[in-house]
Image (cartoon, rainbow, N blue to C red; front, side, top):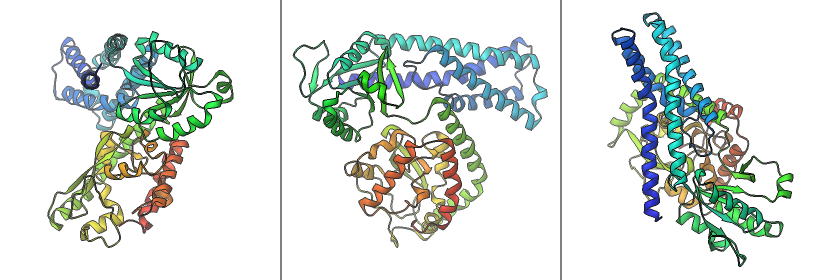
Length: 465
């Protein structure tokens, strides 16, 4: 399959995923309309408002519960649990809104109860059908991830056999990388040496790298791990049975072949759901509460100097994908190309209004919209301009690992004084060290601690300009 064909299939699967997500709220609303007809009730204004609220709630809530994570290796039981949990949350929010607005009594109890029970059954049937279709597509070689294996030994050969035989996993093995491959190998080709692997991963958009090493290869694989930090591929370590018994990392298996993750997203499904739920609730409340302040700022920016109100800049988000980050414009220029110059003290590009906004961090208020959209989180590594990413990823080991989570409005580095201009490599290295420490020690408690510290740090910070 050619590179262009691969990306065409992935684009088609993205469209399928979008349609699948939209069908969840559409089916829920259609069921409400149909059940109202059977209940001999006109689809009045309160029914329409219920339908609209449900439509708006289902997508973010279901996404937060992990419903829209890849179906690859997802058991039907877990799929059902996520869907039912998401629907209960939606109904809980609807009941809460009805209680606060004192509108619950206008609905027929029989209609609401029937709708409450029917929606999860219909959605489960729909998702099970999609799950079966995607499983079949993966079996036929579509909707697949591309993987390579570094190192040839008995364990990696077993892994290759499992990936080849279990096509419904949707993981297509391109080949092996090894410095001294044996003469006899199965159908999987040897692509190159270990030193050639990182460049191959970058050039061919490899999704997954499996590292299978023996004791005598430790030094070679240490260098390889260092080089692979400059990619966004998921990297898994495939240990020997002896090493597996001695290690304590998060472990997985593919049909009995043990894997230990080296880098991956640090959240479990439940933790991801809780973190996303906090993001949605707090960013929504912030946008509502701060709307008068943001309106005043928008007017001040508009009349302070020529140019748009918002500055939209390309930055790297989750898994190194480009996102658009919003800020109130604080400069006379709109830099977003291959060379972005960091702001310095007394920078003439900064407008008088912009200086105040940057000093108080009010220029970053529009990023609550990024959080509500799901592009960012309240807490996480701060996103850097694309030009800065491309420069520092070559200079700082492990720089790209910070993109395994969504970027944040604030982060562990910012509350520890790493804010403002990074005019030296040491300053950026210190910031990245804090970011990686955050990934290693993440917890909801740490997020809350960072949020509480942020207000105090920003109010007295002297590094912002």
